[in-house]
Structures are given as C-alpha cells and as structure tokens.
Image (tube, rainbow, N blue to C red; front, side):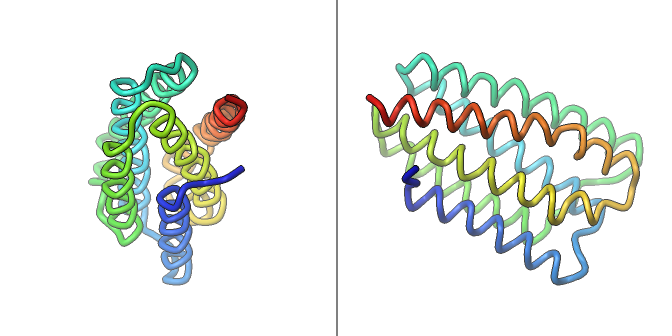
Length: 176
C-alpha cells in the first residue's frame, strides 16, 4: 500500500496532535467533542468533493457512505453536546485536523480522474487508521463523561469498517 505525501502528512499530524494531547493530560470532554465533530466534518467535506469529481462507481459509493455515516455521527454528537450543555471546544488536535484537511482538499482539487480517486482513497485509508488510533489511545481513555465515551465506543466499529472498505477500494484501484 503506497500512500500519498498528503495522506501521510495528515495521518502524522493527527497522531502527533493526539500524542501531544495525551502528554498534556489528555483533552477535556469539550475538546474531545470538538475533535469528534471536526474529524467527522472533514470526512463529510472530502466525501462531497469525491462524489462531485469521481467517475469510479466504487469511489462514489464509498464517498456517499462517508457523507451519510459521518453526518449521522455529527448529529448524535451535537445532540449529546446539547443534552450535556457542553460546547465542543477547539484544541491543538482539532486545529491540526483542520489544517491537514485544508491541505488535502487543496491537493485533491488539483487532481482529475484516476489520480483524484487514488489520492482520495489513499487519504481515507490513512485518515481512518489515524482516527482509530486516536480513538483507542486518546479519546476513549480521556473521555470523562460516560455518555460521551459511550458514543465514541459505539462509533468505533463503523470507523473500522470504513477503514476496511477504503482498503478494499484502494486495492481495486491499484489493480486497474
């Protein structure tokens, strides 16, 4: 599996930011909520771009799944934040995610056809692996509120399934 420089940079920045947060005693619940919302929005935005750009049926199907699933998680996170009277807060991790997403979107917008599909899927593989690592090493261990922790635990299998799906699409793209 070969990843683009942008995919590696995004994954690395996410891992570094979450490792930093872990070293600082971990993110607070409002920061965790902010990370969750930001991470989901990034995948929604990339999925929308992919849906608009790709001609590959499998890439389009995957992108639609990202839009649908991550929108649903953000709705759940928003409802939970409202219920708990918690406002998602910015953190170094959420800021790093936004910066990496902006770079990825800029890169993707400059690509067409097969190059776009490959870069999008390579990024999705790296991104979902980084998100899983962050869930396991930072978000779940540091979430103090039981309902917030439960939401993160509940969505983890979907993120793992997204990673598997992205790897499958990546493999199909590499064969062509």
